[in-house]
Length: 536
Image (cartoon, rainbow, N blue to C red; front, side, top):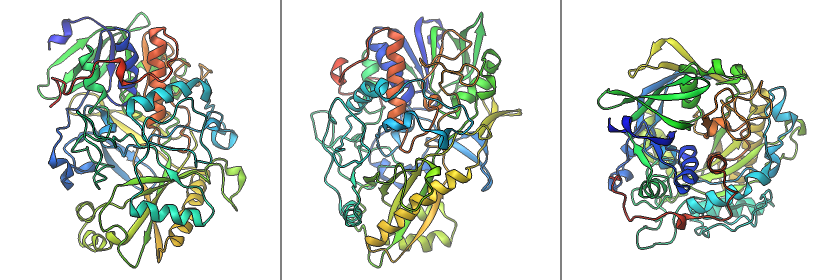
């Protein structure tokens, strides 16, 4: 591996929202940056529309990083997505800001966890602006009853609602609610080098076949490479070495050849993800360097995500239109008849049910075949309920068992609190009302036990005894290690976390350069190639 002899200012571990956005200001400032990614590039083309490319059926869903999950429902094995661009390649594009009040969530959420944001919304606002520009977010929050203050408009206007989305929005308005377009990181205007979204049914859970979704691998990573950033795909960071209070080396293994090497740089930005970042820290024994050792891997939150499926007499979505378009925030801070001591609830989002072919594949026969028949008659609403950070929800390492590349395997223990369950049920109750108003004969609830919204396992905070990171994202106890992914966020809020991860990572990267906070800085600041030489 030739890179072992090269000199870098910063090594960034992970190519998701945290890694790419932290790297962006550093590359802009002229630093020599090396990005490491465990996965490979996702090839784009018509095959991305096929069912075998969706969710865990994709080749980029990797069982070789299996982790053991104990979440009270059942004990199971889980895998992870690994690819250049990280989860952004397969996400639905939702790009929501936390609300101002989310930065001071109150005792109903925090309880005795010690979770605290070391800064407020105003500190992150300019970086939200910047992230939205870089991601080309399309949105309009004029009807959002909880919209936070902003200094710049969305870069794009949203697309017109498709018939299923319009049906949900109309029903919500008849109930006196204020539905609004979900802000989405999707390209709606064609250009010389970019295709426009066709509103297909393969967005959330799929890589975009035509590159219209503004994931990191489509735009920003090739742009950073053109500006000088080195990217090493299929490279697994297995251990961080420490000498004299600093990370002295990143030990890596090539996934394809099994060859190992040690890379060095002046600083390391760890952005492997909310599960993988504490995994690497614990496997490297870095908890011994931290005054907040007992908090590393703990306080895992992941939202109480619940899907409410409304069943209609006639097909609701014959065209299999786009997945997500409508947001409803009327119950973000509470709902009628709900005990106010529960605190904040969260949001409701319209989402198209999975396609019949996918349902047949993931459910055992004959259940899958029967369920697939009813899919065209379904409209769905996703409830995203904020959950409490509690110490008993955590990730740990199993030294007795190791994965095929050497590190100890990861174990996850998670239970929703009674308050989390109540918040989720309150949002589901409102989802049922909306679906009933839209004409549903009846509705069913399905809980989503994924970790796609996980945050909090290596959190920021002011108290060095309870927060492994300081307000700049520096890992307390080591001078040159920073964490810039979802694990750094102290609480989950009630919206999708990707934009907040991106904004905070831009903030951390900017602080590392010593430059002032940006104002509406966009893609034009780096040269754009029609196609990077490194992209497939």
